Length: 215
Image (cartoon, rainbow, N blue to C red):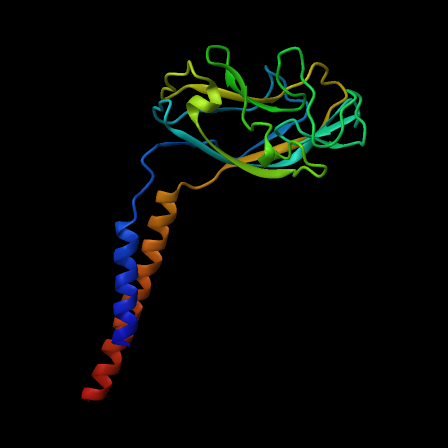
């Protein structure tokens, strides 16, 4: 028992000494964004806290959006999943750009002051170049990589909108679901809590055994 307690105590000390993330994490609440969400109708959320260029966003997305009545099905980065040849002449694993310069069906984030940017980049992680791109994937980026090199800050109370990049929403369907991935510091604190509980239970059990032996 004493050896187990020592091991658990050592584990707690290691966790406590683990460096926590130094950048703050922009928290995006769980949201569902319909394929018909436009730059004026997409869901919004209010930023809690102040953030700079080196702070992070760490989010997971799932789902697909169909535009042009299924003529172009893509994930949140705008990477095509189907059909074999889209209405834009593209194939799975590729993208097509709207006049704004961003991929069709890409999930956008921003506001009129900040500008609007793809939340998920079209890259290997989101299936760019793959014949079978994923519909669910994460992204972890610094805010200056998300909002551009001229980004300076997000202040508490800023309203950000999420919407789907398209030119005609009348024939769209499907949706994206996003949520923030817990930051490493939160996971460490949760592990510390579990470890402390285990140590306490072992010590109580040892004390009970010792009392019975003494009796």
